[in-house]
Each structure stands twice: as structure tokens, then as C-alpha cells.
Length: 524
Image 1 (cartoon, rainbow, N blue to C red):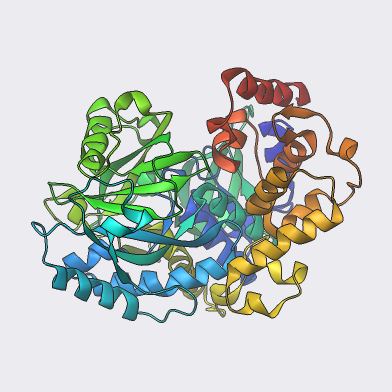
Image 2 (cartoon, helix red, strand yellow; image 1 turned 180 degrees about the vertical axis):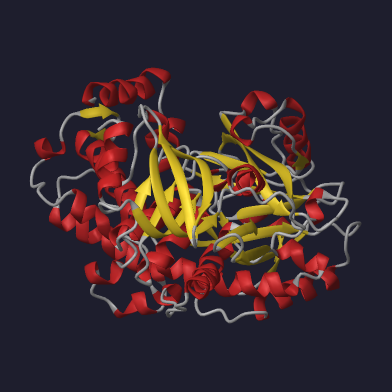
């Protein structure tokens, strides 16, 4: 399906009057989260995104659901508590794309005394309830497998819990939920102008490939454009004077061959005081990041530079036995984080909290400033409530205990253990799939369960034998999955599929990646 046809199909859902209650501008995690919450409260919602869902900042994170241990140092106790409360909610809402991870913090006595680290970790464990994540503990790195990848001078460490997330898939799941609740999701559709129209707004939407723009009337506008939020507010909505501003910070990551033989991650502190994560990634790789570099320019054209690669290698080489070099880098990515400017001199010290700005002038609007992926749900909940108040009807929140699409693994698992730990449900889901399709390859079953959770049974609803999967376009990627991604997840290009809906691009050769692009081209 072409982007133009997709736009017209979604556009027809808006109704003959081409109107909605709320137009959400921006298809990152905040925009899709807000659209989902609003749609679940019964509002008529349209979301437009100029590119693919999560194509920029929201797919360029460190892939962590975390409270932000280092934010305690800046006394951001409220932000840390808010994030810790959300951490377990999110891990329960979609255990196929989010799961617990243990982090190893080697102790550097020159940086901080051990008692200070223990106090910080005790606070981290107790600022919010933990139902299934284990608490912190000390570890003798000389006599533990966790110390094996480290240089011998790192003798003592601490271990604590946080979570991992497939960030790009989280964005897609929010958009899917919003769509199934009645929202219209318009990808590759730029909002070129938003002008006041009586007590609402008149928006001009231009789809890629469409000859003419479409006009949409909205009672309220949510500006969740991430790094572009000031541009939308100023150039799109005509709000020229505003006291709140963004600070754009580039964060870059590198992916190298696997550095460790265990499933724990490391949090390493550089000599400059910044921290860098070393995270097991995609079975065969290690993810290393991130940097904090002030950014000016076009956020869609952001790239990692050689100095950042060298910095990340230098930081981890202070700890690892086997040095990481720029030549080891198999893939890299960079994103621009739109942080709330709080006048801090250091990019690392800038708050990761958010601010919601609302106004009825010249018509109802809400702008999202800042934020982080862990707090997207509570941000969306607060935003939806405030938008409702602008529209004269508060309506009740509902997402705190809701599953994301595919996250309700309980319906496929018959065991009491899942009530204690969500990952037990995932193991049960995979076993259930293999009982239904015993000829299915174990690795493929595992990947599908991780990507789609309970929705894997929708994708395979009419599959009873291997031929029904269709042609294997590239290793482990069949036509049935490609068609599902196009129909249900707004995937249009090979990049959408290989680097956001999955990370198969990391495992494929150039010719195998090209085969996916060729298949999509052949579909029209």
C-alpha cells in the first residue's frame, strides 16, 4: 500500500466533516502515548507524524526503563520516584518487549565512597514499591563471573535492578492501541500549518506523495513534536513569545560484538563523571552509550561523529579487559533529546523531567516539553486529563493497569506463577506457540513472541503448516510477517522493518537487507 493510499484510507475515518476533537502532532512515544490515552477516554483523535512512527528520538534511546539512578545525585527525588513507580507498571504492561535487567556498578573509590553508593542504592530500592524486581547487593568482582570481563583493579561492585525496552516497538504498540480505540494514525504526514478557527484550529496536513494537502478542523491541538516542538509552536501555531524553551542534546550509541558471557549490564563512570551503559544486545552484540553533546541543526539529520565513538571506547576501555576500538563498531545511531532547559551548564545535569504547558489562547492547545521514555505513560495520563479540562470534560484515566497490544500473556498461559513474575508468562507464551506449531523453529518462535507477544496468534491465525508462512524473503523473515507489519504496524520501507519494527538489519548482510526492500517495492 502506498503512503498516499494509506493516508486517504485513514483520512476517510475522520468523517465527512474532516474534524476531530484533538489533533496530536508528533508520532514519538509522547505523541502516541497521549493519542492512546485520549482515544481510550472517548475523544476523537487524529495523530500525524512527518516520518515513520518513532523514527527519531524515540528509537534512539539507551533502551532502558529505569528510575535514573544518577539523577539522585542532582537531588531529583521526585523524578526518580515517579520513574520508579512507572518502571514496574510498564514491565507488567508489555512483558514481551520489556523485561527486568540487572546492572553491575564497579566501585571507583576515587569517585565516591562505598557508603555513599550504598545509600544511593538503598534510596533507589525504597523510593517506590518493588513487587518482583530484586534489590541491590554487593559483589566481589574477583570471585564472580560478573567481574570476568573487567580489568583486575575493579575488585568490588554493586548490583541493582532496572528494565530493558524495545523503544521503537513501544511506540508502535501505543499507536496500535490508539488506532484500535478509534484514533486515526497518519504516518508520513506533515502538519504544515495550524491556524485558529473560531474556538478551535484549522490544520493543513500534507501526506508524502499526495498532490494536495488535506484540511482538518480540531477542537484542540497537542504539540508533541519532540525536538521540533518549538518550531511547531512558533511557526505552525503562531505562538511567538513563550517563556519555556528546549535544550537539544545529542545522544549517540555504538553496537559492537558481544563483550560479556552473562546477561547483566554494566553502568560505568568515566573520569569526567558521566556514566556509560554497556548492555547485552540482540544476542550477539553489546550496546554502548550514551553521549551528551549540545546540538544545533536539523534533528532529522543527526549522526554520531568520530569524537563520540572515541569517547565511548575510551570510557569502557577504562574498565574492560578486552579493548573496544572504533573498528569494532558494527552499527551506531544518534538521536536528539529535547530536554527542558533549566539553565544548567552541563548537558548531563539538565533535568529529564517534563512540563505540560496548556492554554486556551487563541484556542485550546497543550505542548509537551521534555520527558523520558520511562515516564511516557504518566505524562500521557496528565496530558489527556488537561486536554479534557480544556474541552470541558475531564474523563477518567485508564492506562495505569492496562496492557499494551500483545502484553496480556495471561490468556495464553495457565499457571499461577505469572501473577508473581511477568517473565514467567513469556516463557509460557513461547511454549504454547510451539505446542500449536511444533514444526516451528525455536529461534523464530522466540523472536516472534518477543516482538508480538500474544498478537503472534493473530499473525499466525490461519497458519497450520510451513508453506502458509509464505516465502522466506531473508533469513527468518517470511512474507506473512512482512504483510502483517504493513497492514497493522504502518511499516512502509525496509528501514522501518529492519531497524525499528525489528533489529534484523543488524544480523543481515547488505544483500539480505536489499531483498526486503525489493519485496516491498514489488508490493507497490
